[in-house]
Image 1 (cartoon, rainbow, N blue to C red):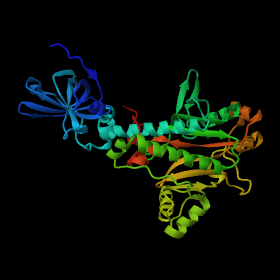
Image 2 (tube, rainbow, N blue to C red; image 1 turned 90 degrees about the vertical axis):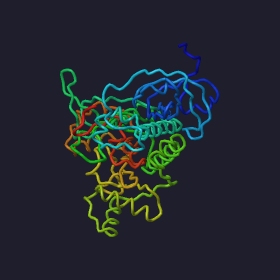
Image 3 (tube, rainbow, N blue to C red; image 1 turned 180 degrees about the vertical axis):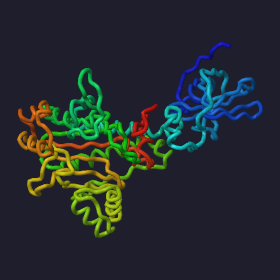
Image 4 (cartoon, helix red, strand yellow; image 1 turned 90 degrees about the horizontal axis):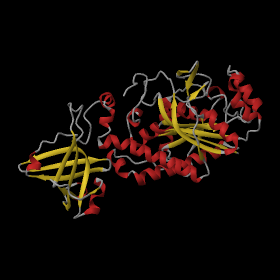
Length: 435
């Protein structure tokens, strides 16, 4: 049979080709045989479409998840996805499954546990709802880049194989680097500071970070995507909190506009970011928790329940889904955190909580080399191990600061996912190294 002349299109574009002969390529999402007719729901990267097969074409078995190409004219059909369908005149089967499917994909919800879904991750991501998670995350990351570029930030790349830890060696994955030991980077923190000092002033990075935390919580991943920001000539942590507020507002509005169908599959909507997010010193937050909820928290910090309750307190006061917790003690912050000269023992740092979960740590950094060396020694670190980092401070470093956001955790919170692993394409945790 001669191949018809046709245009290959995506399912979402079918209404634009009414009456034309087109070709769709994708997977068999579902196929129902009704006598001499078969109704095929085809899935491609843009969505679902209905294709109608008749006669010999309808008699051919089409196992679910077969890869096919269908050609035919586009016709109106109000009951079909998008209000149109293809009346198939040619069918090509490009591939068929050679083993039983791990679970069904044609249902609205996947009827399999998380571990089963993760064991068959690439297959599971074919499901429209599961696949929507990565599309939402992609739009968040795109909007992150978009906003910062418009604010004069330069996107950078920093090494992921490092000689020492950002925070002195805790929670590091060791690797063999030729004839000497090395580690996977916990964050780009030291490098983004160095690039600020190199004269770029405003930098950001979207890249992997690694934490060898022996944790099985629903919030932690051993490998995650870190959205990092660092900027020079910042003299107040308030400036950084203002920047992040505007950044998140742009990101959330962008994902609502560009990924509305994906959000709808999860019945999710990004929260409204207020013009000014509430800011509460950690000491005051601990007092509120004790007074309001009789909740004791660790000295100088909030535990998981404390974070949830302080967000509840802010929400009940009508101040939204977010709160900055500020003025953390030096003992709970990294060595480079800037001390508060007006509050001995405290730092000019913050965490941002959203709906009861921390999504950001940030603050001002020490820019005086003598103070930085003293802070290292106070933590038992050896300054000579940080010589390349210290050099740019010794050669003139401006006041600076920044913050970082975990992309998977942010995605999970927006969509209401029970586990951050659901927001990673191929998650890594304490027990999972495949696929």
